Structure formats: structure tokens, C-alpha cells
Length: 289
Image (cartoon, rainbow, N blue to C red):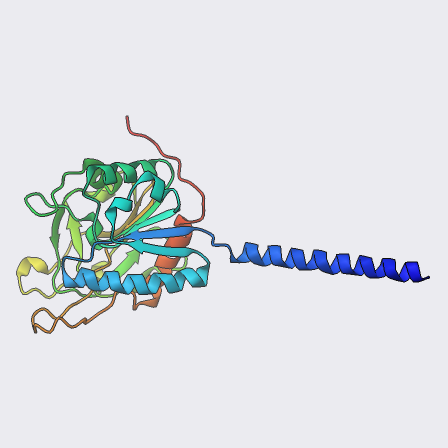
């Protein structure tokens, strides 16, 4: 009888131990991040872009904690190398692009080997005879598809955006149209709609016109078709034109007048886009001949 009681106690202890181990393992699994994000930025030119970078580097860590991924950021573009990038499933360009040939090649290889990317606003900017020449054909023509910058609206204003691909994982929770945060809107040299590799996710709805306040007439758009968010179907990527906060330049106070991430609908898109980029499912890369 004594042996039987001892045996039952041993079995009970083993059961408790197994249950604790299982719960610990399950908790560890639940807490391990789904994916890792690294954001590159420069934050040296244009107060509006610097403001957005600071805003993003406060907002994304909160979202990462909420949705169980990790968010790191760096202003050291030399980290754009194969060894460093191998630690991350998603790369963000918050305000600029890499300039050094080795950095550019590492990024191209990362994307062609199944990496994921999201770029904001000035990350797509290129204009010959400027500080950011169009000297990277793969990135601007093949990858982004947009080519050179052509013009922009001014002042930063909200636009009504039309969701053109409502079945895409990044736009699945969006209404047909919604009002964006204020932004400086770009247009591009290349016709993105004519590019079979490009899927346009959002464009400026015609109800937005006139868009911009000037004072220069060409800074106000009265008509036309302007894609503002798109993906290249050959890569796991999304570019969005947002990322330029409004700053009081005219009054010379440099006060922040608007914030990109103060818009719940737009933020839902960013969250869904990041979760899609980090879900581990790779897009089959179709190398051009």
C-alpha cells in the first residue's frame, strides 16, 4: 500500500513536470517573434522627411510589440550587406535609398533571393542633375518601375485615395476610398499602369482635385491619373508615396503641422502590408532576360 501511494505521487510529479514543460514551450513559441524588420534611414535632408523618420521610429516599435515581430532601425547604410540582411525578413527604406555600389548590389541580391521590402516617399526619388541622380536602373526602372521623379504637389494636403486592388492582402481591410494623411504627392516619368509587372494598389481619386494649394500653378493638380501605392509582382515589395509631414516653413517656425501616422485607416494598411511582407511566403522571382 505504501509503495502504491509513492508510485502515484511519482506519477503525479512527472505529470506536473510534463505540464510545466509543455506550458513553458508553448509560451516560448507564442512569444518568439514572427519575423524581424530592419529600417534604414538618413534623416539629414528636409525637415518634413526627418519628422516622418522620427515619427516612424516611435510608431513601428509599438506596432511590432502588438503584432509580435521585431523592429530595428539604423542610419548606417553600410549595414546594407549580405551578412547583416540575413538576420531580417523585411527591409524598410524610410526616407532615402542606398548610394554605394556594394550596398545597392547587396540589396538587389536580397530581393532577388526572396527578401521583402517597403519603401516610403523619398526612397523612390531620383532626378538627374540633382543630389539624387537616376543612376540605378535596376532599382528605379525594373524594381520600382517609376523611373525618374517628374513633379509634385505643394503644400502637403490630404487626398482621397482609391483602393484599386481590394483582394491584395495589404488592402483587404480598406474601404473603397479613404482620406489620407497630408502628404506631398509625387508623379513619375514612367507610366506604371502600362507596366505588366506592376500592380497598383492605390491611386488618387478624382474627387481629390484640385490637389495642392501652390502657390505655383504647377504645384496644384487638376486632373490626371496618379498611382501612390504599388507592388512589383516579381518581388515581395510595396512602395507608398506617403512619408512627408507638413512643416511650417512659410512662418519660419518649423513647427510640425501634420503627421503621416495619425490616420487609423492608412495605418491599418501599413500593418496589413507589413504582416504580408513578413509572412514567410516568397514571391517567385522571374529574372528578366
